[in-house]
Each structure stands twice: as structure tokens, then as C-alpha cells.
Amino acid sequence: MNVALTRRDILKNVAFGAGASFFTPLLGQLAAHAAGQAPRQRVVFVVQSNGMSPRHLMPSGVERPKSGKMSNDRLEEVTLKDRELHAALEPLTPFKDRLALVQGLSGRIALSDHSANLGALGCYPANKGALAQTIDVALGEANPGIIPHVGLGILERPEQTLNYQISAAGPGKVAPIQCSPELAFKSLFGSVTGGASRQAFDRRTNLLDFMAEDVKRAQAAVAGEEKQKLDSYLEAFEALRDRQAKIDAIQNDLRKNAPKLDDKFKKPTECNRLEAQFEIAAAALITGLTNVVTLSSGGGGQQYIAFPELGIPVGGHHYGHGGGVPGKTYEDCFVTVRQFHCKMIAKLAQTLATVKEGDGTLLDNTLIVYLSDSGDGHHPQLHEWPVVLLGNLGGKLKTAGRYLQFPAYGSKNHRTMANFYCTLLHAVGKPRDKFGVNDPGLKDLDQTGVVAELLA
Image 1 (spheres, one colour):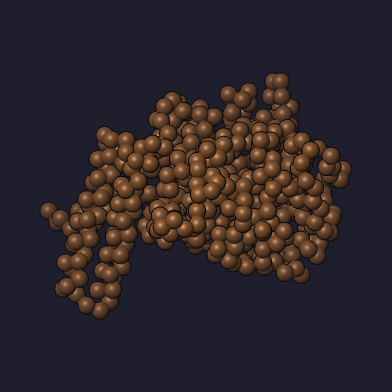
Image 2: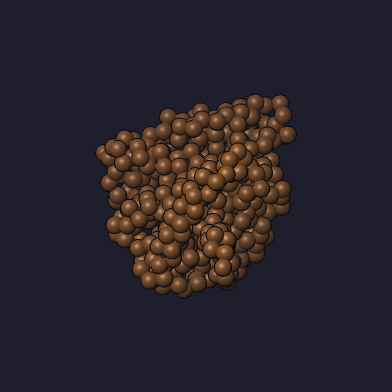
């Protein structure tokens, strides 16, 4: 038996199967945190399929033109204080003083018949695959945890375990969203659950030790280009081994905060699956496994979830085209499904608010970004892309009780989703003034820079 070849084959199948984001974890900020420096910043993207109606972001006393299309040429802002949130967002009311409801940022470069796919978080054409990093992965790289980025979600059928149409690590490199809560749980918390999961964790650790020693021995026998390749291999194996060691070192925190593998994980109802993924996300953030999570509910292509438990036994394509269900109009369906997602977001925020960190809580250093992969509707126009923001990243953003209607598409001061994503990168200390691909419909406008009104 060729032992070295067998190890390489096993390593390829076992260690790298979780995705490229596990390959080179950047640990600088974790070290800084351990040394008592600034708390870690965390970002959660909640990406829901089927569009987000701009009207759902409008608090009481705010109206839209009857045409539905905004024509303002300057920023319009109102405070959320003493205003009621739309029924669709009502579960977020306890966090109203931490909310910014953002309207008017366009994303037409990603226009498609339904989902903008990777273009939603990447600001590039919807149907050309992974052209570049998406913002969630970019933030994970800029602000890494042990695992730079964790993608969790649900698709239409429980047996669909991966979604390749939301996040990307770079050109031609998708970052899969894990859509099985049970598999996600075992992947992230297997080291503390015992049994087969713990054994698999130990096998990976031992295998990485063997591989690193193999490479070190081989280095003495080669030179030049081959030695450089071996140097790269050794660096990769040692990075993976370090990640395993980091996970092993926080076992007490993992054991304390890991969600219970109960019926929510095993019963394949849509509500159960999504709730389980939100619980996994909370645990991953609390324990420091990651600082950036993407939670997708459907999304990509025409992935629309039915929610029988909410009285909506049909997928979103049905009510996206104006169809109702017994006892509910199509608008009732949209509101009911959005309320459920907002309940999950509120529960996540409340969980993070209970965890002390420095002089505040974990929520104080977190931003939750809630949007749809198809922008403003089932068949989007993307002249505007409604976004709900909860939290301020440790004071880096101005999100306290604000409703913001940015200048309309084509107007002099119009801003885009790419500008918004640049804003997030500035807020985490990795400034960039261009993101994605420019919108040719705005060729006369400067599309670089941040949305200054959101930065503290």
C-alpha cells in the first residue's frame, strides 16, 4: 500500500470537503481579543427569497408615491421614535432604537427575472456565476474568526443540503451554504458531541499531524520550485491543524453554548429547519467559531419555501404572482412569512444581547443585515434594494432608529448596494472604495465610495 498516497486521498476527501473557507483561517483578531483588546465585530446576513417589498420598511406616517416609484433627488430621513413599524417587521419593535430601515440603494447590475443569485451579495451580473467575492466572505476575510465565514440555510426540500448560489469566495469559487441543520451542527460542534463526530474530529487532527511531518521530511530531499510547493503544502496543513487546535481549545465554550440536537434539527419542517439554523448561528458567534454568518431562506434560482406551519402550504412563487391561499391574500402571505423571519432575527438579537462582552454585550458589536436575494420584489426592478439593519458594529455605524430614503435611481446623489458594501468594509477597518461591477445605467455618476450617512 502506498501510505503517502492514501493519506493525500483521505485528506482531500475529509479535510477539504468543508470548503475553501476552512483552508487558511486568519487568527490575528482572535489573538487581539484574547489579549484584551477591542471586542470582535460580527456581521450576520439574513437573505430571504422572493423579494422584500419597499412598503414593508415604511413606518407609520410615511407614504410612497401612488406610482410606487420614488423620484426624490436628496436623502429623506425620519426617526422611528413614536412610529409603528409595518406589520411585516413588527417583531423587531423591541429593537427599534437599534434599527435602520434603508431604502433607495440600487442594484441593477444584478438584475434577473427572479433571484440575483451571487450578484445579490456580490454586486455583479446575476447569471454569470462567481465573478468575485461576495460581501459576506469579504467581511469574513477582513475580520476572521477560527472559521472566517459560516453559511447556513434551508432549501425547498430537506434532502437538498447545499446552496451554491448565495456566497462566493472569489472568481469561480462558490462558498456553499449548508442547508442541513444536522450536518451543520456536526460540522461545527462535532468535537464536543462525542461518538462518531468526536472520533472524526480526532482523525482529522491526527491526519494533519501525519501530513505535516511527511512534508517536512520531503523538504530535505528537494530544492527549487518543488521545495516552494512543499512549503505551501506545509503552510496549508499547519493552518488546518492550527484551526483544529483552536477549536479544541474552546471546547468548554462549545459544550456550553452548542444548541441541543433536538427535534428542531431532525424534523424536516420548514420552520424547524430555519429556527435550528438560527440557533447554530448564535452558538457559532457566541463561542467565537466565526465572526460572519450568512443565513439564507431559499434564494438562488427559483428556490421558494412553503411554510405549512404558518398556514402557507405553497411556495413563494405562487403568492409572488398574486395568488392567495385559504384565509390569506397574497399580501397576507408575504407579511406572515416576513414576520416569521423577523421573529427569528429578534430571537437571535435577544440571545446576543444576553452575552456580556467588555462594557456591553455581544449584540453591541454586531450588525444584522436583512435583505432579499431578489431585492424589491418577486420579479425585481432593483432601482432600489430594501435593507433592514439591526445593530451598529460597536458604534461604527449610525443605525439608531432611522428610516432612510436615499436619492432615487439616476439622480445626482444616488447610491448603490456596492456603496453600502464598501461602507461595511470601512466599518470593519478594511476600507475599499469599489465593490463588484459598475452599473452601466449610472455611467454618468461616480459609483465609488461609501454611503457616508451610515458611517458614524
